[in-house]
Image 1 (cartoon, chains in turn purple, green):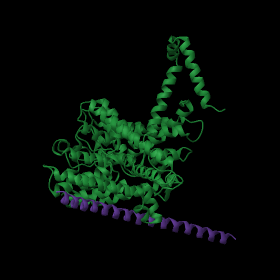
Image 2: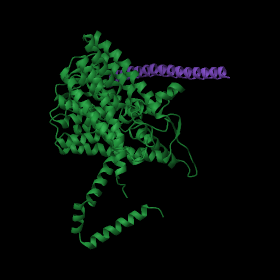
Image 3: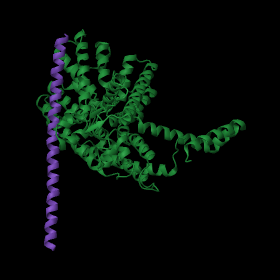
Amino acid sequence: MYARERASARVRENRVRERGRRRAREIAVTILRVAGYAAAIAAGFYACGLMVYMVAS
Amino acid sequence: MWPRLRIDDVRSIVNTMGAMVIAIALAMLIPLVAAVACREWEPALDFLISFGAALTVGAAMRLVRPRERGLTRMQALLVTGLAWIAAALVSAVPFVIGGYYLTPFDAFFDAISCYTGTGMSMIQRLSHLPVSYGLWRMIMLIIGAQGIVLVALGLGTISRFSGAGLLFEAEGHRSDIMPRMASASRSIMVFMGAFIVIGSVVCSIICLALCGMEPLRALYHGFCLAVAGATTGGISVMDVGVSYYHQPLLDAVLMALMFSGTFSFAVYLRMARKGSREFLHDIETRMILFWASVVLVLLAASFAQDAFLNGAGVFLSKGVFNLASAITGTGFFTLTSSQLTSVATSAVLFAFILGMVMGGATTSTAGGVKAIRVAIFFKSIANEVRRVLLPQSARETVRYYHLGEQVLTPELSRNAMLVLLLFLVTYIVGAMAGVLHGLDPLAATLESISCTNNVGISAGIVGPDLPVSLKVIYMVQMLAGRLEFLALLATMVSIGVSTARGVGDSPIGRGVRRLVPPRVRRAWERNSAGSASKGGPR
């Protein structure tokens, strides 16, 4: 009985740890993705600005 | 009838604010350690004294025990409003001791500017500021960008209570999407921390490799630039701002950091679970990008007609970069104030003003009206026009995408319009105050919008010689913009009403009342009894 309880507690712990790991991985990927989007927006802003300026002048 | 503060309210407010003052005191340990590490002994002593004073005051405030746990709605709003003022007062102490400002009031102004992420400064000898003081300014930016209450919630210095959701909202965040606020605030801190770390590494490498700085100096400058960019605070460590570096690559990295700080962190959090669609379809993201494109076209046309600021290189470094800074509410500026007011045409100045008007996203580090309100405003107008054109029996639901599919309700439209109107009135009042102080109308408008939207771009008006009355107006504008009026107005009204009633009930007030003719007094009492019974239960 005691061994079974201990085993189920270990399973629960593993599940929580796995969920935490997955969440951390998701957040890390999102941070990189946001950094990529921000860099793309900055580059696009420069490129569009230059294009419009060329047309306007 | 306006509610009046009771002694129990004051106890709860003082107790909760005590926890926040302690949190600020603990934050002072970072510059203290930095001062010791850099062998800046005088600043270390300043921070030690300030830490001791703040801790004592905070502990004394915690000794005031409230009768009931949790905060009511009114108490929560007052805590939010007062916490920002108290934090600025406590944080200004090291600067006052260090003597970096002409007056203590200037130090208080600067602390408010740092916490609200505005970035306007009255500091003396900025380029020669010790590292510990520079770090302290950056820490204030980080705390302010997250929201003082949010930081306190995340660090657990204040526990969850009934009014926590309201505190969260009063600082410009959305509480309905965050059932577990403490963990959500920690997640936001993780995002912010990650942007700062990535930005620090890249900026430090650029400072080291391209600007020819020593490694430690490059690290310090890189960190400060990353913090000022990601928190959209725009505070610089050099007198001349980011122009000091003369590096287009650094400008581009800072622009990416500014954009990452101006979009909604709540959307990033949701993006982690649901994918990029959350970001790309979000109404706020689209509104910011749309507004940026419109003003970019206007600015390009203005620069093309400018006789002095011409050339593609000048447009990119002094036009596009500054516009991104204005749109994201950061306040980095590569034009000097004299160039902005004397060399650039009014059209360029107007384009920068338009860029600042909207502000960033909700739950971001940027202040201002917020993109979602402007988007709702436009959607409401479009809906009204469509309603007029459609048959009377037609019923149409207007939807938009922000943290999931949302329905545009009349209440949402009304709230957005109300806040828009409040911002507009504040812009006008600030500009009028500037004009009354003898400023140029366009420059006064720029300064007023810059303060209200926590941007920090200045036409050179804000400085130590600014009249005190205008300093007070700008400080109120900065706080109003950051707290989105609700908390600040509630604080001002509650304190005003309570003080007026307190004076009225005091022996002096009773004496004054006796001077009023009995007939008039009876009419007053009748009126106040009537209004009280109208508001009471039937």
